Length: 208
Image 1 (spheres, rainbow, N blue to C red):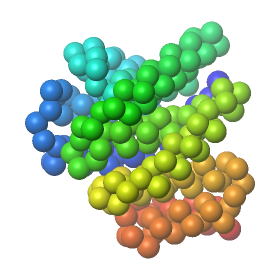
Image 2: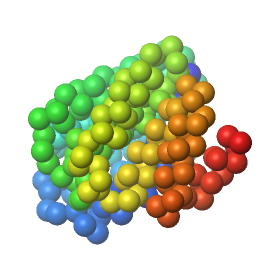
Image 3: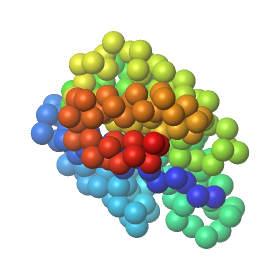
Image 4: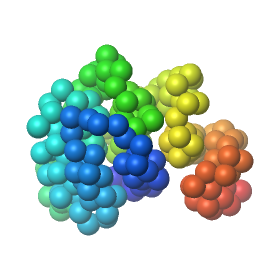
């Protein structure tokens, strides 16, 4: 089982910028950022999972921490050579993300300038798109993206977050071979001069 790696790293520009604007929270933002840095590193998934597990266990009702614990757990499937562990990590991570989505549906909290509910949805959509097709999560990812793109709160989020949503939507459209729609989302990234514009330009070239 190989988790495709093109999704989660693209949200790094958003999450790593939140430390400057995040208000006081029950969990340590510094510890969160450290765990996220591990998650973005290709060879530190185990450290990321351990760090997010510790954070989430200290605040078990926080959907954001549970979502990142789920994403990092699912990502461990790519690091083990044992097939049964690959499936176990992926399924455990998916279950955590499902629970995080349920919790986030009634959680109005913010993470910096981003509603936790939107960040949880983006984390879940990114991860669902990354797992193999036989896990049947692509449809759920598509619905989450549809929900985010139609959510009026999205326009008030930082540009980096909106660009991450557009990127994820472009990847989902590409997977469905809807290249015009994928190009549309990529062009939005470029037209808004988002930090991720260079990656969007490169992907546009690949789609042409």
